[in-house]
Length: 395
Image 1 (spheres, rainbow, N blue to C red):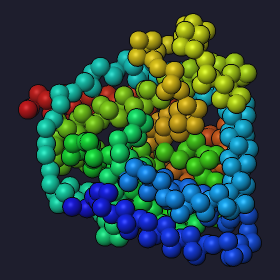
Image 2 (image 1 turned 90 degrees about the horizontal axis):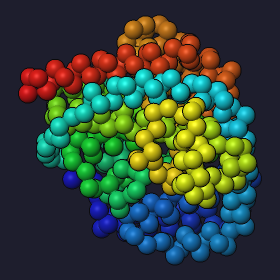
Image 3 (image 1 turned 60 degrees about the horizontal axis):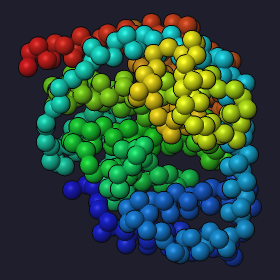
């Protein structure tokens, strides 16, 4: 088995201890960004320990409380959060323009992707060989082997929001993967592949960007899910092309689009909030009736199913990251299929600017015509619908 249960918590604690001792109170860290990364990485490792074992590491919690610089990162997080909200307010009309037509086109097609549940059961060995084959084609198989053979991939407790996540120790450039165990084989492989995409993203950032940029990436960029969502979708296409667990794979393609529409809907709602509700995340405390009456009920909102709308699901950063992640993943996928030269040009621009705060100017350097995004993604959906219908007709 390449996924480890709570018995491996001893290994995590040992690593945490080594990390603390090597960055103890007597060490002198001169760069502010490096100090920030040290504490941020402690947070990541502490959360990793908690998600695997169900309890907090007393050693780490005590260390964090005694470390004056820990307050620095809390202050910085508040500042970055305020900057992120300010940036969204400045650009929310553009976000609304980009996603409105797209959401309409997707909702027109989503029911055609409805799939029967598959029941394919694969061993960990079979799963590893399938993932290895796909990743080797992308020159990414080394990332998978690294987390497996160094025992950095774990089962975690089920989460309301995530089927898995990649915990990245920025200070030492060391990734861990946590995966919910309550999934079928294809779901689990897809979740792992998604997190491997995050690992590739982070290591590529280290090659291109300075330390501070990497440290701040997940706090300020709305593009932090693009590469992982692109890797995930290409893996599903690979499964279907290779005839692997076809019904399960079609279900996962459907889930991919359903998830994207969910986050697009959340983002569309957020673009229609008054600024006073956005500042300080005040929208989180609004009662459901007020949100539905004043926001969802607006004529400008289309395609929102009020019966399936839960205000607690609204999260500005998550909505932006996953909406733009899935959207741009499909855009680059379509561009790569139809015009390789254009893809290489625009994707290169994206890689060089993905860590920046959002700006329309940056966006238009890697999306040739954002008004054509709905049509391009609609064509991608139509292609997936045809494939799904063919598979179900033959099976």
